[in-house]
Image 1: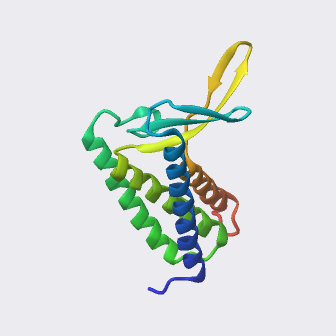
Image 2 (image 1 turned 45 degrees about the horizontal axis):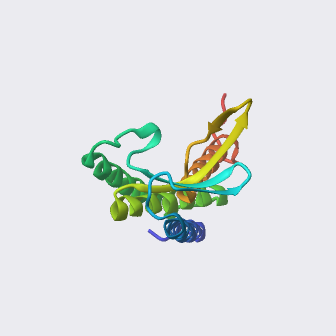
Length: 166
C-alpha cells in the first residue's frame, strides 16, 4: 500500500518527537544524574526532578521484571498498529496525533530497554495554604502521547467526518 503524504508527515512528527524526547532525557541525566529524587528548581512551580518510572500510570506493573517486558511488548504492538494507520492518513490532525503517539511510545520504550525504567523529570507543584500539591512527574514523550490522543479524540468528535448522531 502506498503511503499518503500525510502518512509521511506522521512519520516525520514521530521522528521529531523521538529525537526531542531522547535529547531532553540525556540532558536531564547529564544534569541530575540517575539519583532518584534529585531535583533542581527551574522556573516558579516547575522543578526538574529525576524519577525512574518502573511501571505505568499509578505505579501499575512496577514491581516485576515481566511487567517491564509486557509494557515494551505493548508499546511495540501500539507503534506497529499506529504506523499502519498512519500510512492511510488523509487528514492533518489525525496524522499529527498518530505521529506524536508513535514518537512518544518509542521514546519511553527506549528508556525501558536502556535503563529498565522510563526517565521522568518534569514536576509541577503549587503551594496553597501551607500545603504543597504535586502533579505527576512526566517527560516530553508523555506530553506527546497525551497531546496525540487529545488530537485524535478531538478529530473523532468534531472533525469533518465525525460520526453524527441520528
